[in-house]
Every structure is written in structure tokens, then in C-alpha cells.
Length: 239
Image 1 (tube, rainbow, N blue to C red):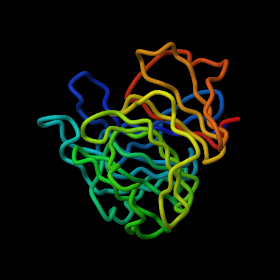
Image 2 (image 1 turned 90 degrees about the vertical axis):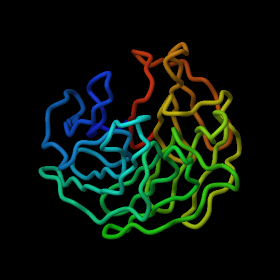
Image 3 (image 1 turned 120 degrees about the vertical axis):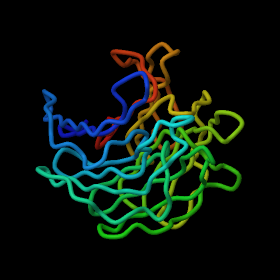
């Protein structure tokens, strides 16, 4: 697993009020880092404590949390945040990954977008759409770069799904196997690649961790220390 990580934004209270706080992990301890320029929640991002990005989200808690997506993008170089170019579409509650050189995000918002955004280190541009009829929010997923992403579950506007799909830089295709239980609306997050992916089910579960090896899903012998929901995480590999 990665020994360098960061988190930023989110909500620190039951009201859902966005925060600009950021923290980094060096393999043993967490410490504060510079705050992101704008407080937000429900955003996407990727990278590590020396090379990371955050994009989209919501800077408002009016109405249902997340109904006001934004298109902002911030880049982290290990010491300071800078403002990057905007996304091609405003979104939140999606999934994504990568770094400041190459990144991918997809889905999101209360309208269940089926589009994706690719980042080339300078600009965001529209990428391929998710599989037909599967606009999603509250997705589990990760991306290595702008041409390799893996998406799990999500809410399609009427129900949570077990859909798994992968991106090759041009189009999304169905992955070999769907995850066993339907998840969505921010219930869980995961990390990894199209051939090695970890996914932790939501708070109502036993704290188990699911693993995808590129062909099949299985439940590992490991459990997360605390069960939780609507959270995020990332890493360089599952095992």
C-alpha cells in the first residue's frame, strides 16, 4: 500500500458544512497541510502527499447536500495548492483518480451523469461515457491515469447497482464480474487498478473487504478497523 497520502475538503459537522482542511500521511502519522483555496464537500481526487489533485464537489449545503456541483480543480505539489483549469462539466459524488499529470473522474451529481472528464496535466476534456443507461452517483472507483479507470456500483436514479466497468482511454466496457452486493450513494470507497482492486462495504456491514483480481471478486480475511460510510481513500495497489 502507499506510504504517502492526503485528504482534503469534506464535512466536519452533522450539518454538512464544507471545510477547506487538508491533511497528509507519511506512512506512520497524519499532519496538517495547507488548506485548499475553497471549502467543499463531495469532491473527487487522486495522487499522494507530494503530487495530488482535487476536483469538483459542492460548496453549498442548501437543499439536499450535493445539488450544487462545482467545476473547480486544485493541484498540490507537496508544499502548496494552485488553481488548475476547470472541469468540462460540474460534478460531485463521482469517482476518479490519477495525479497532476494525468487523471480521470466520472459520474456524479443528483442527475446521475454518465460522462467522464480526462486531465492531461493542463486541461480537462470530455472522455467516454459510462455504459449505456448507467449514469451514476455515489460510485466506488479509482483511476491510475486518464486512460485507465475502474468503476464499481453506484446509484442509477432508482436503485443501487452491482455494475463494474473499466475505462481504456476511449470507452467504458463491462468488467469481468459484478460485485456481489449493490452499493451506492457514497456508501463505500475503494482503491486499486483494473486487475487489483479493494472495496470496503458500508457501515451496516461487518467491516469486510472485497478484492477484485481482474477476473473475480472475493471477500478477504481482512476487515477495516472501524465501519463507516460516505468516506474516501486511495493507494497504489491492493496487494
